[in-house]
Length: 125
Image (cartoon, rainbow, N blue to C red; front, side, top):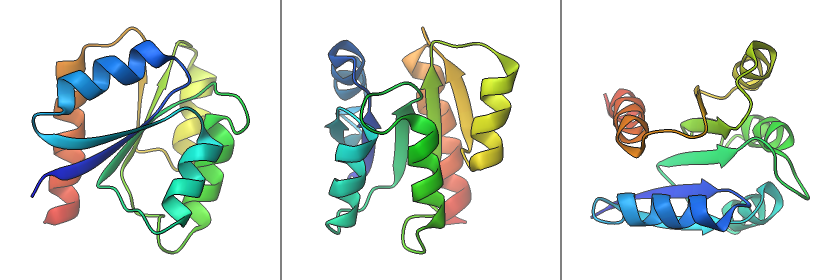
């Protein structure tokens, strides 16, 4: 059975690229913003890993991290943040709130794949 990857990004092109790249190995679910993704998760849908954009409408990445990490059911899901911002303070803020990793756009999907695999492998040990 395929592992599930939740991609949260308001840029349709990022969702399409990640869905195309990861669909052979993962069941990819794409949501447009943190609010939509959180509703999906709270409906009982689970995922093995989340890749989320930092800057989104309705619920930005920072708000998403905070809500995800206080949920007893969702708090341990590996989370990688994506952002067009390469500022150290943004990275530190995301990591401090509970993101497991942070990558700057544009990014190499192969590098993202390896980061996801490493995180999921650690969870399954």
